[in-house]
Length: 149
Image 1 (cartoon, rainbow, N blue to C red):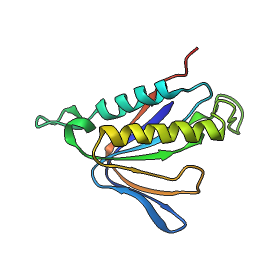
Image 2: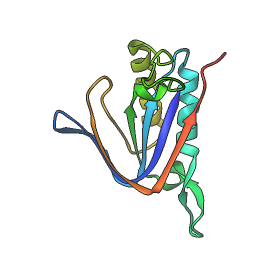
Image 3: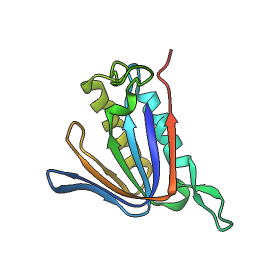
Image 4: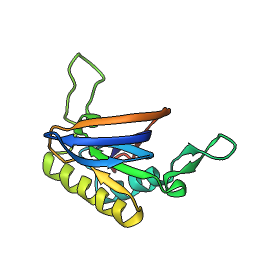
């Protein structure tokens, strides 16, 4: 599984003009599911999302995690993160999980997140979403928990 983390001062997701998820300061995580991913990858990815240190401490160093700050977490499914872009001028989506598995693992990730963290919002799987954010920094990190081999 893949997560593109962005430290934000605010972020929101709209579907058909309706806001379906929004947070204040925290992390917007765009989430991609790859073929072969399991619930174990979802659990490890959440552990990394919540524990990754990308917020500044009193000395101005990125030493605090989302778990430390209690900020918001906005999880947005984005299958294009699993694309193979190594050659040509058009992405191949062969590495991406099929829709049913992708939805199940994204939903599992959301369920785990809601059990472990106070403020969790989401996008809508399979929908055309308009995502808005104010990236704070900018601070953006790519996290990947590869499928088992």
